Amino acid sequence: MNQSQLTNNHLNRSKQTLLHLLATEAYQEGEFTLSSGQKSTYYINCKPVSLSAGGSLAIGNLFLNLLPEDVQAVAGLTLGADPLVTAVTVASAYNNCPISGLIIRKQAKGHGTNAYLEGKQLPPKTKVVVLEDVVTTGKSALFAVEKLQTAGYEVTQILAIVDREQGGKELYQQEGIEFQALFSIAEVQAYARKLNNT
Image (cartoon, rainbow, N blue to C red; front, top):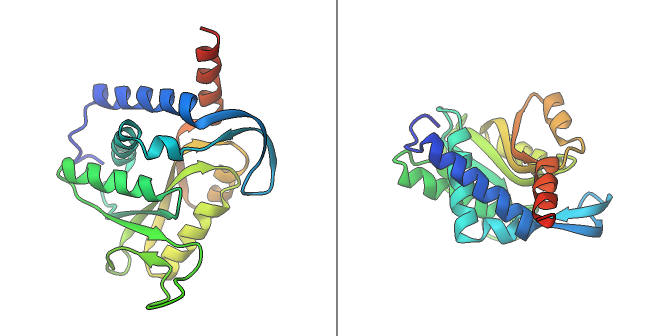
């Protein structure tokens, strides 16, 4: 976002800090079953990082810097995106370019308004960017996109912390949605290996 007061030096430090946190606090090797049902020899859980002070600050600043000028809100699917949305809205306020945040429920609220979306109701056609912690197949963020579009918002981009490089990017391309990740899983793995060899 061009309105941001963040310098390149500050962003580079934030990116290095975040990579270190991901490699030391989020990345694990072993035998895992992913939410997609796929088996994996590694797992990356960004919540310990996104819920930490340093991680949240880095994520908020890095995502804020990637937002197009005309974006008015960020949104994401609960639970993984909750701290990401909050980090970006707080960073936007500190950088004098406040934007709104929306959280998408996995199921409609069972009472009251029965809403899928939580947050301030925004005008139709509001431009929203979807945030995701880890993208594997891409279906979770696409669910968020569909709910936002049903509510009348315009979604043209998805931002993620980590791309596992297992089809999500290609799915978004098919849907005509721009996608960018702060890191590929290969970058996180290479950094983790480097730390383990020192």
